[in-house]
Image 1 (cartoon, rainbow, N blue to C red):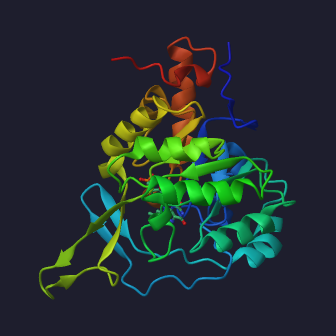
Image 2 (cartoon, rainbow, N blue to C red):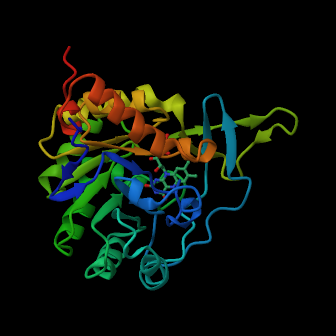
Image 3 (cartoon, rainbow, N blue to C red):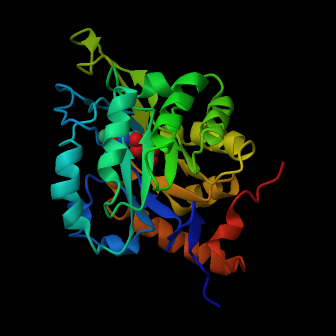
Length: 303
Ligand SMILES: Cc1cc2nc3c(=O)[nH]c(=O)nc-3n(C[C@H](O)[C@H](O)[C@H](O)COP(=O)(O)O)c2cc1C
């Protein structure tokens, strides 16, 4: 019998549990030469702010063992261009569309989600965790009070399902997840990148222009898995797990830790087909192991 790959998150049905991660997939168009977006469970679009942003000056990418550092800094065309130029290109693409909303103030978050109301966006991922701009939301995501303030303000202004994306650069991620849930988050996604840096020993200067950047890729997987396990064990809303997923086995592990779905980010930079391979590998595994539905994986790992 065919495995039912569908998962439901906050009332939205995804045809399978694999979503591309924000910032690693642009606005979808970069990958359509390789496979149709309709293969994917969902697409999480590039982080968008109310006003356009140029991003940070280069160098803003550095290689690391099993990963990369980036300090792109939320380069994006702004909310208006997102709604009038990017979104129309995605109409009818046959997958769940998630906008990644970032901001530098409560007002800018609210202004952006109001712009998204009435658009084809299926879900909003509230980015309170970007480490690469001074005012990129990580300040909000770093404390329970800050996280609660943004979620509360935004919750009152949108009817779209709201998923809050958490930063791993905190001491107690569980209390922040709970604060978001208490203010009406419909789902939690984690993790954003881990703050790191590198130094060029020839020039004796930091490699990145911004000195620090966000670490992503397979190197962060065990940290992400641990945090998803902790958060999924503490909240009742669905958790979407990401951070270092490159193979179907990682996605299965992440769901076993408690994730209802996964996102794939950095892996798409070095294997354009990574999300598709993960979907196919997971489906074959579920069939081999006698699962009727992908959703049965969520949280089945036991101590
Ligand atoms: C180049 C780059 C740009 C990113 N831009 C965003 C962004 O705009 N918004 C966001 O929430 N996360 C952004 N992220 C973080 C990813 O969505 C993801 O949380 C993180 O990279 C961990 O997953 P991964 O190891 O699968 O990449 C970005 C990551 C990279 C590498």
